[in-house]
Length: 273
Image (cartoon, rainbow, N blue to C red; front, side, top):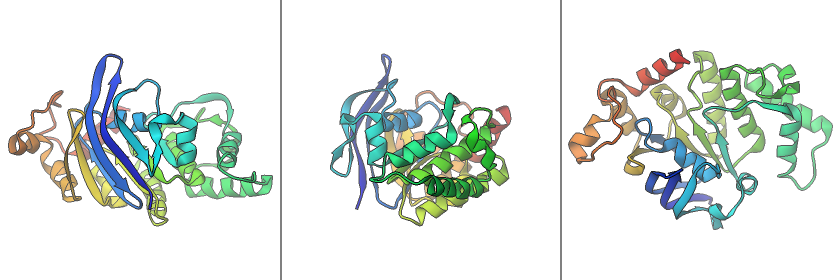
């Protein structure tokens, strides 16, 4: 049984400490919903796990089974089974999408795929994600719409077959049809035993993918863990109850967080973009 373990993780961005002692465990086959107000460290946690060099781990441990994740370069973390679908996927000029995917898949295999097998897999994945297959000939994400970039992240996940997939607001900017495609792909991977760590401000996505647990990050720490009922409560009440009932002072308070549901927040953000 695979397990991702995070122990007392402290992370800085520049001189500013963002994560202040995160403890979290995700077992094989679990889908953990990670919630929290904006600016409290959710994306920082995912980036630190994946090895983004802009984030400095100053203290703590991350283990994937018995492997020390922090001792691995980014490519080794990926080959070990970690995957991050980014909130803002970058356009990569000069890197052909089909060739990129072929290289990423083959580095995980003892024997490289044949050209026929490669294109058969690509055609199936592009069709399932609702992306025109001719876009596989473009440079990675170049000329893609925001929604196509997000679906392309899930397409990569399907082809790379990681043990643990981390999704950073994969639903932001998606219309209803695209969200249904993304959610369907996630559910299919859940049924294969894939583990997920999902950051979202949109209750509807969680309704579609059915997380097994919920964790709430406040001030760079996991302050509350529980069942999916926490998602419903935050959707209806915001985060104000955490301060009132648990006595946790919330830094960087969102002025609207006690009056706006997570679903409405996501819709507003999508409209802005």
